[in-house]
Image (cartoon, one colour):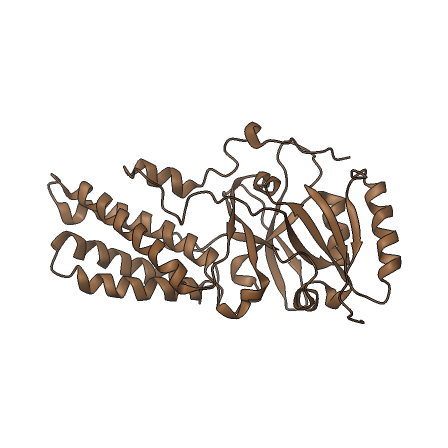
Length: 329
């Protein structure tokens, strides 16, 4: 049986210690980039739309599933971020062509980009460009949007689980790192942050080159590693503008080698995933309310969900509400 999670994340100082941020600081950067620093969660709740079958499994296990990012429903998942980076890198490469050190840096960066694109057509992750992360998706749309019910909520016969947004930062896999991030749909918003990251990367590279016996060689490891960090972060967060109305936030998970990777079946095929939960539990998931989808059995589903919550020992304070969307299924 689960129990209520702690009110503070003070017990878990490493929950959102992003590996890349630690590495960045090791590379003498004074200020973490926007792309890798922790974000302040939004006020209010974040909603996870799901089918009733998945909903019952979530409550029974006190776990959420973070799906492999390459298996999500956006056909341009990852590539939208890579396209954004390619545009910026192409411009920077031309601007730095007369600087011997920075020219070498952008040769390394361009190679890293090609490696990342190459994995999209491969059968699995590679050491050169892992892109091996998993996400659980949420929305700050209030939990009752028709397009979300159609796409993710069982065509109305589902539920939107409202989570305490601050407490979501506690979630993590058994072995790995996680962070709560907001999706970006506007390239013009992402561009200045990417430029700042590259400014910092250049500064690190120039420090590595200064006084080195072979300065052009000395910059290669830092440029390769740091730009790989940027690839992971940008491809996690930048999405096509057509998905803007989803108002998405994500818990993005980077698993360690010892993290079990499971596979589930969906209507589209098989999807690798990892389980995430509040660590050192079992704790209940930080659920504040449940919105029941607009199906023909809505009233009965409300009754059944209340019964399930009671049977699983969840707090009586969780509100179960009915969708107001006039959509028949």
